Amino acid sequence: MNVVLITPTPPDINAFGVRTISSVLKKEGIGTRIVFLPGGVENLRFDSSYIYRYSEKTLKQIAELCEDANLIGFSFMSQYFDRSVQITQYIKNYFNIPIIWGGIHPTYRPEQCLKYCDIVCIGEGEYVIVDLVRKLSSGIDYTDTKSCWFKVNGNIKRNEQGPIVQNLDALPFVDYDIKDHYVYDWRGEEIVHISADIMKGQFLKLPYYNNKHLIAYRTMTSRGCPHRCSYCASSAMMKLRRRSVDNVIEELRAILRQFSYIEIISFFDDTFFAAPVEYFEEFRDKYKSKIGLPFHAQCSPTTINKQKLELLLDAGLYFTEMGIQTGSKRIKKMYRRVEPNQKIIDAATLLHKYESKMIVPEYHVILDNPWETKEDVLDTLKLLLRLPGKFKLQISSLIFFPGTELNEKARQEGLLKDELKEVCRKPFTFPKGTYLNYLIYLSGFPAIPRWFLRLVSNNVFVNLLHSQKPTKVYELFFVITDKIRLFIKGVIALMKGDFGRIINYFRLVR
Image 1: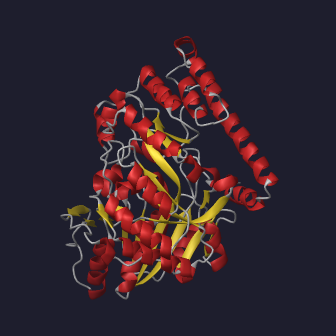
Image 2: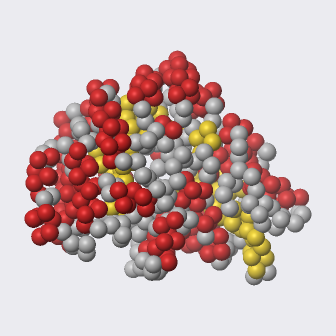
Image 3: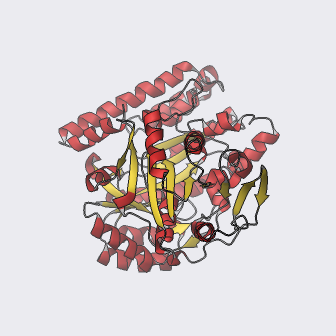
C-alpha cells in the first residue's frame, strides 16, 4: 500500500498532523509520500473571485506524484478549502483513487467536503487512517471505519466518532524523513523534491536578540487547550493532553541529530504555560542538560505566574507571546476569556520585570468584531496603553471559523451569509481601515509615545475620525506604516551585516 498525503499550509511546513499520520503509517509498514503546498498571501495567485489557483504545471506534477497511490489524503484548515477543491478535482479527472479529507475544516463541514472527496475523517486521524488502509488493502468493506463519513452511491454514510489518542507518548515522532517529501516552489510554480539544502530553507526563522532571526524547529508538547474560546475551533474540538517530558526531549534530540543547524526551539502549544509547575521543574532540569537551546513558547494571562516563568527562563525561555484579544469586559464574556484587565496587566508586568532575560514579548489582539461598539474598541486601546514596557502587537481580524460558537451566532443573526467568501477566502491578518484600529496598530510601536496615543484617542478625536465602515485612507496608512517599519528593519539588518535576513525576505515575496 502507498498513501500520498497532501497539505496546503502557511509559509512554513510544520504540518504536525500530516507528519504524525505519516509516521504512524510507516510504523505499520505502509509507504507514504508527503506533498507540502506552502503559500502566504504575499505569493499567491488569485482569479477574479479571489480564489487561489495553482497553475496547470503544478497540478500535473501533484497528480503525477499520486499515480501509484492506493489512498490520497488531504489535511487543511478553512483558509485552504479552495486549494484542496482544485487539486482534488484535477486528480479525479485522471485517477480513480479514493480521496480522504481531514483537518479542522472537514471535521466541522463534512457534508460540504463530501461534495468533492470520497471520505472525510472527523477529528484526530492517526489510528483512523491505519484502520482504513488495512481494510482497503484487505479488500473488505471499509465504509464502517469509525470517525469517517463516506460518500456511497450518492448518499452519505455517517459513522460514529472513535476515541481520541489518550497517550500521546505512544505516537511516533513527526516524520522528517525527507527522502519522499516534496514541496511547492512558488517561484517556478513547480513541485520539487526536498533535498537537505531545501529543507534548511523551509524551517522558520524566529526573532532573536539584536534584531537577528535564527532557524527554529517547531513542536508541540500537548494537544488541546485549557481555554474554550468562542472564536477558536481547535480548542473546542480537543481535550487537553500532554506528552511526557522524556518524550519531548527524545524528539528534540533526534531532530538535532538530523538537523544540526537548528538554533531555536519553538513550543507551538496553544498555551504552553498551562502545564503544572511540577512538569516545568522536570522540564527545566532535562532540557538544560540535554538540549540547551533558547526556546519560544506561548502563554495566557491566567496560566503564567512567577514560579513557572522563572523555571522556564532558567531552562532557556527567551521569547513569549500572550493572547489579550480585547480590553472590553462585554466582549471578553462573548469570547469566553473573562480574565479581568488587571489580570492581563499583572501578567504583562511580570514579563516586564524579567525583560533583561527575554526579547520584547508579543501580544495578540482581535479586531473587527461586528458586535463591538466604538467604546469596546477604545477599551482595548486603553488597556494596551496601560501595559508596561515595550511589546510587539499581533493584530488579526475576527473570522467566524466553522465549529465555533461565534460562527453559529453570526449565522443566526444574519451576519454570516456566505461562509466560503466571508471565512475561507477572507484574510485575517489585515484589519479594516478605521481610526481606532490604526491607533491600536500604532500602540505596538515602541517609538511612538504613549502620551501621544492617549491624546489622539480622546473623545474629541475619536468622535471626529472613527467610523465603523472601512476607509481607504486608514487602509493606506496601514500599508505606508508597515512599509516604513520594514524599511527601518532592513536598514538595521544592513548595519548589523545580517544579509541573510534580507535575502530571506525577498525569497518569500514576489
